[in-house]
Image 1 (cartoon, rainbow, N blue to C red):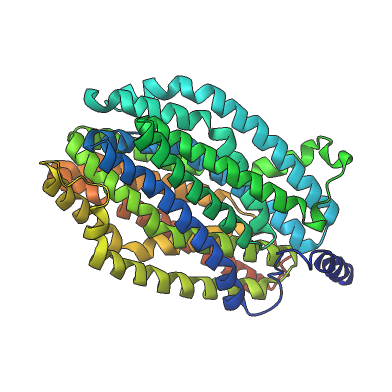
Image 2: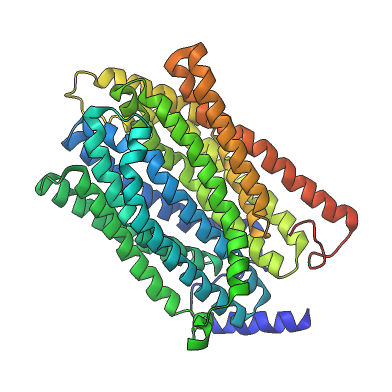
Length: 474
């Protein structure tokens, strides 16, 4: 333990001029909030520029184009979510190495993560464009929006390597407790994305393809900035030998990352089945779902941020062998998440209808019907939002201490909840039954994940074991 403290002090001195945050000391609530706040702002920026795509397309091109975007949501998330959560899994090992103060291990886990991201991202970028059309056919995408949906998702698939690179760079920075750099990168990307949207969609008349190009290029700029800032962290002074392949480290990274990626493949498969059912109700219903789903990011962005903050806090304190701070951090994270979820829920109930109007062209004769459907869906998600926030916090806590199997099972249960509603509830309630798919999915997963967390903590308390010798959390 004494050696560990000496290493951490050395790492802390070397990182004193950077934005690194030591989460193993200080008030947990203050640490988690101060770390989560820039992440919230960064995620909000990301959602705003994604919303900008939708607003410009919906207002400038029309409801058919809006429906085309919506028809691609789940089949794009089939790629986006697994690669994002794969990098989160990789970051667990990096975070724990930081908590240990082991610079050699930090560098090796970062370089091997980069190698894996390069290989996986390149393969996905090459292979998935070939599956775009079959996936849209599989979902029975309406003919009037098929071509637009195909063009958009193909461009997004081609940019997967860039998106994965940005996700990994952000994950490395968060592992060091730096939430400010991803925020700045996202602000730069958001401003650039809006400008490119106006130029390519409205100016050059490239339609939704222009929106896709703007998004991918903006992510590349954000990645470049984050990579530059990583290079300035003293503990990441990578040497040539750090790039030598280490299969044992790569196996550990994949062991942490693959369950998270697979869990989100399961979640997306459930969503694809949901999209299949939605498509059967026509393009107006698809447009309504699309409008609400674009606000879903605003509903969830704080939850994701508190999840990232919790995972980093837990990972560093797990690496530092400090179980009591883990318990303190869990209580702090949940209090903050609950407060934010309640405020956001109230805001959406009061102003959600006005926000939805951003996506729906008032000149369209079907606009009132689309708006009513979209607001009903938004209302149901808003009043159950606390479930989603609890799910993110507890799942991230479990990930941070190195268990990614429980989140994987939670993902399977989320898939089961979404599919059960999509297949059966519309038979009883018609199209309105689909509005309960997300809430049911959150509930199925949250009950299991939260229960599992407390079972794990109870085992630690009952055994009286030290964190470094406890196997029930690993």
